[in-house]
Amino acid sequence: MSLNDAETIDVHAHAVLEETMGAAGVHGPELTRDDPPVFRVGQYTLEGVRYRGSPFMDPELRIAAMDRAGIDFQVLSPNPLTYFHFIEPGPAAEFCRVHNDALARIVALHPERLAACAALPMQSIGASIEELERAVRDLGFLGAYVGTDFGTPLNDASLDPFYEKLVALNVPLFLHPAPAGIDGPAGDANLKQFDLDIIVGFAASEAIAAASLIYGGVLERHPELDVCLSHGGGMTGYAYGRMALAARKRPWARSELKQDGAFDTLLARLWFDVHLHSGDSLELLKKHVNAQHLVFGTNFAGWDQQDYDVRMEASPYTVNARRLLRA
Image 1 (tube, rainbow, N blue to C red):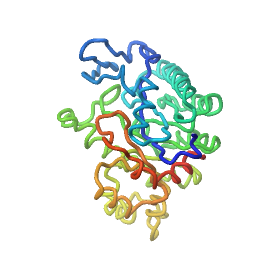
Image 2 (cartoon, rainbow, N blue to C red):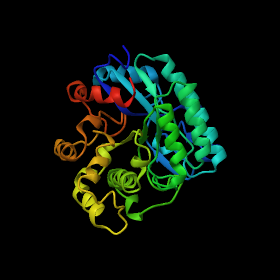
Image 3 (spheres, one colour):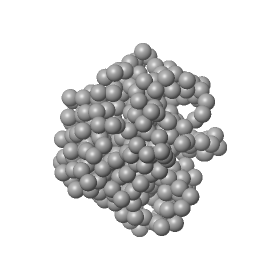
Image 4 (tube, one colour):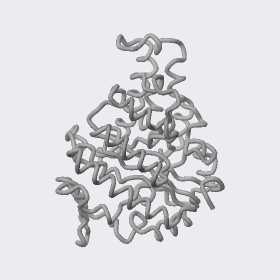
């Protein structure tokens, strides 16, 4: 089996790697052997998630779980808890090198079932470009997987060389939020209860990313750039009307955005995984985005992974995934 003949492709599957423990110096990550275990990133701790002995860390358990779930091929990506986008550039770059090398070794065990996207030190655009090129050219990675927030707006001109490199390498960029406050700004204090940082905070971050790319002219400056947003772009489907109206009426909107259909044309350029947990939400998203730019995702082995065989649900998106992944 390979990416070219897989019936089901999962583009949203994070990996946790034993070799990366301590690779960011004092920032960690660290995974204790307590019962229950504690996962530490900087001052942030996550208790009770058993990464060791699970598909997150064990490739053989991953393949077995993929078989049970009906997933033929999976694109592995960094754990959002370990993006390290706000620490010092040196340790961040070192962590990404260690991470990507370790992830490549896992993919090499099952190249017929697994591929990978790179972790990048986005606080240093130069270092990110270097690591992206190394990961794609030397390690065979299919793209990059970074956070929606790394201290620089996605539409900032300083990122243009990074976007240009993605296009030159002919690989997509995947955007997936990290919980606020792990190694960067704390964010809204109300998000600290009931896991609201990941339940609704992610949805807001993904919609902000979509809006920034469209309003900020990124897609026009880079007409061949492909960007895929996690979780259906968060609240993008629900907020579509307000976002489109702002493009036509707000004083900051560029003249090009004010043209009839301009917002919709740019929105159709974006890609989204369909990990939304609701058929109604998915149908709403489909009304406003490009159906040929929807791909399947699971957050594999995570708390919100589908708990059933996904073959029938995933297979309609396989052709799209192949196009996004240049298969």
